[in-house]
View (cartoon, rainbow over the protein chains, first blue to last red):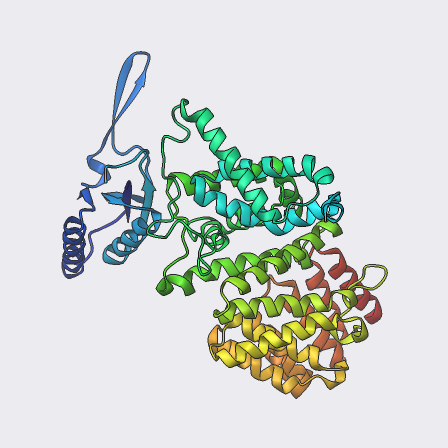
Length: 117
Length: 409
């Protein structure tokens, strides 16, 4: 088994309509239960928006703190899921469902090394 | 017998290499689970063959000999490097999961390899390079030359793609039937792209172009052999064969392009035409039309006509109509307009062309120019030919367009 990181990218801007958000949360709940029941779920959670981020930069033996995200962009990492899958096709199949459920682009990336079967 | 088997000439070894390289790599990838190791082992096996076969003669089964030799070399290397951590520690890299270890008639290893090389998670340029390298046995330098890319850039593209296959674990597997239509699309696109690159691309040396066309036809034949029930696979092969059949008549002695209507049809390759047309008929019987099959059918209609004037243009317009119903793209609409010019006259065709949004495409301007020329609107035709010239780098095409311009001025 391998582990994959599914990163969900969100555009800057206001929150969507509550009804829309509710449908998304319902679909994500279904997906999570399915991942759990098949033993594929590792971890996943939404993130607070980038204005809540703090960056630490090392230099000259000191660490400098800055307020805000590492990079400012039109899109930011809105949340992620870590799952176990036998190969990329299986991970992409889950990723496709996340993209459809959230209406957002999803990046699938393999972790180094192996996960226990 | 001993005399007959002796002294395999270099051309024989070259033929075995062309024919069996892809199969050997495909089997080795399954056996050792690592593309780099498989390639190295197969190359070493061929190196040994080049040393031994000229004296010893071809073995009874050259492919079997290469695969066995390569497997032994791979096992040796794995043993030698077993103590070195890292390279093969990340084991089980490519899995043919849940499939029997033995080679089956349906799931030929080469089919697995094609689907791995043309996985949709890889960029198309990487799919093409991997397919030519792993299945065609082309060197990185040859592929770089064919696609007018520097060799280091091409090498990097291939290394990156192989790295992604390994690290993201792109499976070594033929997709399930349900996924097949979607997964087949990039496979067919890669083969067609290789052919077109060999047919009509920028400058490039002629021998490389011929090699690419031959490689595409070989891959097309392989796919048709491995997936005989997929109509689009047969359609693609038919299309390649029918286009290739006109190659001897396509260029004038000086290298200038000769249009279909002006070609010396006695120079067309009758054998390729017969094979292509038989495939088109087989597609018709399967009754599941698709874009490649329809393009092949259109080419078959052209191949049927003893002279350009005898072409059944109504049939061709009907086939374009079918293609538009499946996938209405502006490029298909442009080709349909060319056929309409023959059935309904240039005026009707011009109206169709002018409704299309294809300003960046040189062929759209060339078609419009030709229709204007036929309508006697010479000043407009000149401007359209100039617009076409400004949009193509291809030598043969430029020469053709410049010739037309000279006639009008």
